[in-house]
Length: 640
Image (cartoon, one colour):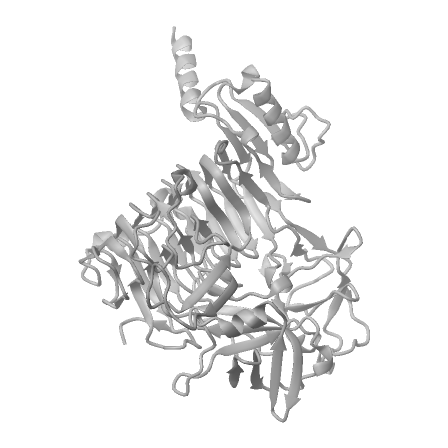
């Protein structure tokens, strides 16, 4: 009898944990073969084949899937040659979910990159390379796919991102002298030993208000101690025609800062690299202690590592990722068409100033813009009841995880986002490419709206390190979203941004909650900023019990005082902001609509609220991965 009772208790425990004793398992291992059966003893080699097997089990309604399908991926590096595509046919059900799970937490990596091997010390010199680095430069063949050289914008040596060769050593930048909007050109101070013979591939990175721009240099003309730069289209026209944000010209605070990069003539510091596409060579100066004969050098190839995509009538549902690492995504938009962002990393496809202001929604509006959305390592669209839990998003060129549209009832919980080029987590439509950004989005089919998403207990650190104008967590037109108990630190702009459209008109947004998050060490480089920032009408939305502190003193801010802890920007309406702890009552309420309620925000907020913000105890193991102010940058501790 005792044995029977023990068996029943054990069985109930298994059911409680897995949902059923009949769940199917498919195993994957770096040592496996796709000709194997997929058992633990005979694992497959690829997750794609495991997914195919799972799809067949569902198609045939195999009895083994009664409690779901668990694809167990053993620890190791899985370098993908194409994105892992999750389709409607891969969907599970409430009582039979599909889970892709790493067997060892943090040890299973899906990579969109490839390794660079065969490094040798450069013998002699090459045209344009500074003479003072002779004997310090290493060289390897750039990889080929087919007969084409792989283009890339990032290089990681080990787990450390290298720096594209730049003329001003980070974090220093120069300042533009002037911008000519008519000729679409600018004047800059002449860099030391500037060589106009080696500008092929050169880029200009420019800081302007709350965004940056990356412009491909077409020509450079030296005149005394100055250089006139012209740029390729389409970024040349967009950069010179759009009114906001634009190059900053100010005798009081200094003109917009910039640096030049991606030219062999700038390769002069340890940790810098240069790609010569024409001759298929990569050049790199190792940091102290790096040995390229043994180090792992990785460049990204895939812009998407995973795509979960259904249709509005047939969404992907009940599909989860657990304990998986996503690494080495690419993003080539700046190399192909330049990059002129509008806000939150949404880049302008077209933009200009109206000669006669006024639109149907805003009579005085003079700014017109249409935007695109950056690629993400993991993209989700038309899906429901999906989960990312205990995953690691690291060493990614652009957005980490993006719930784009048509999603609902999903969870992003207990994940690490570190070394992210753009925004760590995005959710919701911002503007479709065909819709002007200031027009309210409110689709007839409400299934298009990202609804009831939960973003909880994630650590976001060292994000926005490529596009400084991106954010830690960004939510566009969302409904019923909960952003709670996350920690966001070491970002270049805003911690959490919610809303889009700059409009008081009722739109798709309502009933959103930003609660008990810890946001600190933000605005490292960009101002017109806050720890939490909102746009447009959002009836029933609440921002409460958050901790916001330690905003950086951005070295090149257009207005050194234009930083805030909380910021309700244009059109923000029907939002309750209460019980948020911050060091001072430095808030901005800019062109707000009706219905906002501000209550008890500032240093007087109860200590219990302050202490409870951030990741909850069960997820605090993530905190060992955070990075904070490694360069010792000054902090704004109080309103000035």
